[in-house]
Amino acid sequence: MKILSKYISLIVIITLLISCSEDKITLSGTGTITGKVVSKGDNIPLENTRVSTNPSSSIVFTDASGNFVINDVPVRSYSVQAQKEGFLTEFEPATVTDDNTVNVIFELDIETANNNAPDAPILVSPENNAVNQPITVDLVWTGSDPEDDDLIYEIQIFNDQNTDVLTYTDVTDTTLTVSGLDYNTKYFWQVSASDNINDPILSETFNFKTLEFPDNRHFFTRKINGNNVIFSVDDAGIEYQLTSASNNSWRPRKASNINKLAFLRSNGGQVHIYTMDLNGSNIMQITNTVSVNGFNLEELDFEWKSNNTKLVYPNFDKLYEINSNGSGLNLVHQTLNGNFITEVDWCQLTQRLAVKTNNSVGYNVEIYTMTNSGGIVDYILQGVPGAAGGLDYTFDGSKLLYTYDVSGNQNAEYRQLDSHMFIYDINTMVVTDISTSKPAGTNDLDPKFSPNEAEIIFVNTSNDGVSQQNLVKVEIASVSNRTLFLENGKMPDWK
Image (cartoon, rainbow, N blue to C red; front, side, top):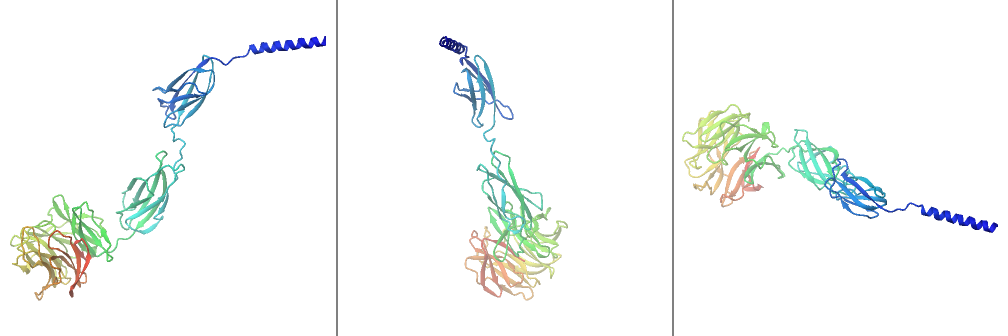
């Protein structure tokens, strides 16, 4: 009986197991996955986004509204993927049940969303609070980025003199050469770094001060790109550009006791006298209603007068004086024969003027001295053919320096063939030729006494009229001792 009972129990258990197996839920059938893809933050629909599932079912793309539909998806759990160029790929879970729809929303972030900002640039040179820096300076810094992204820099430079800001953009190097800075000026500079992904990152602000302007005593003019430009030069031969090459400026004349430089500049169709500080700053127009004018604009000369409180200048056959602030215009002299006044000089000690006049083509030259009120005192050169010029008094007014083309040549091009320098002794009326050692085929022009009157600085150039002009010095006591002072220069002034 016990054995029979065991068999009956076993049969019952097997029957129950079979019955339970028949009642299991089967994973069969299909459903639908729908959804929308938008950009993160602004919720703009993202069209043409690739949507797929894992395990794999169908691959679809979003429409213009960012919507998608995946039909006939077998029942089970999925990881749904949204992928679009320029955005980070996103995954969302979805469980599909038979004959049902599950909705999935994607917010895609741009692919650089996890990018870190650049490190703050580190300024290297000039060091903070550096002094005596040149007016052309190399700004040096270092930059880095956590992802080694390419960096673009912007540099801003401020100063303590005005509100001007120098800005340099799209700099890819970590060194920037800045030129044209002002002397004796404090500058502040800062660098920002951008990886074109994150907001720019700023460096500290450093400052440096440029050196004092040198006390130069030589000034000259050089032509650059068709315009005359004024320079000063120190004893070591280092040149300092004082006027911009975008303006036509020439004939510098220094007033030592007020540290001003007067010069001529084209202004529209006229030429006027301007003044500036010795470093080229604080430019001021002096003449206005009556311009500087005459036979040849580059031959015209003017001079400081009355202890540098006035300026005297030509306008065709008339000589005017004007206060150094632009007021008090006054007619001083008018030629007797209708000649144009081309050059003028002034001696403070004797209160005498010297002028050179010529006709409309540069000849029929007269050089004479005058009183302060314009009365003629003495004729130094008169009734000779050829060109002349280059007036300069000694300090005591006892001698006058000038040039004269001893060839006597006269031509429509105003070409001089053999211009010499002469010193006229006003007391003895003796004339001394200073150009006896001049190279053949050249002209000596535009001479000026040195401050101690032991030397003369002047222009020497070929008489072909087109060759380069050079500045030369000669010792008055030894006129054969001629030395080249500066190449490619004209219209010297030495104070």
